[in-house]
Length: 224
Image (cartoon, rainbow, N blue to C red; front, side, top):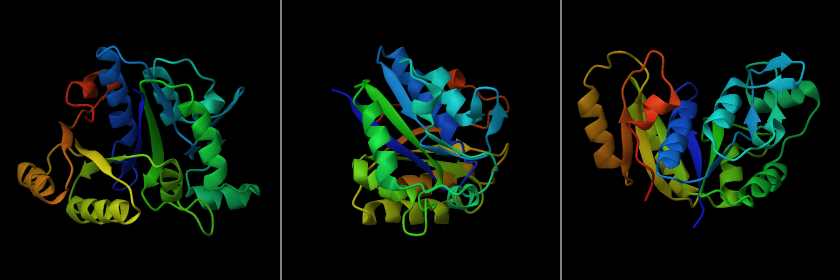
């Protein structure tokens, strides 16, 4: 039966794309078909084919189903700024309803595993009224939380987990991703999260200077 999850993070630059691609590769190893969506991206490169985002391109390479770039990343902005500000600057309106329609089109491809990667953290604004969390709510997807293991991650993780549950969604699991070479008391921090987040830990990804999806997959488990 096809399964789909919304991947969010405790902040920006915590390794959402690495973990998402790693999970896609893990699923491929188990013989599953996979697809991925990056509904909104910022910090894109202007190419002859149009705006291209490095994270979305990585997802495209990691999945097994062939899709056009525009299906994977329908909303792309050039500057590396908050999506709602980028939208305002370009005179565009981005709504959760519009994004949900696009995402449902990809979900209808019925890959055995589809991962929808958010931008930044759980409450990143889309417009003056909505955040990316509203998109996850509309799609009613269980959530995978990527925790960037660094000082401050306990507070960010627990607040995010609380917000996800308050929004009526289930946390399918979380991943401890080491974003620095040596985090003081790493093991104790992971143990604290295991005790306080009421969801399984799907893996502990060590600091990987030249991380690849294939390498990250070695440290990850798929949600049950």
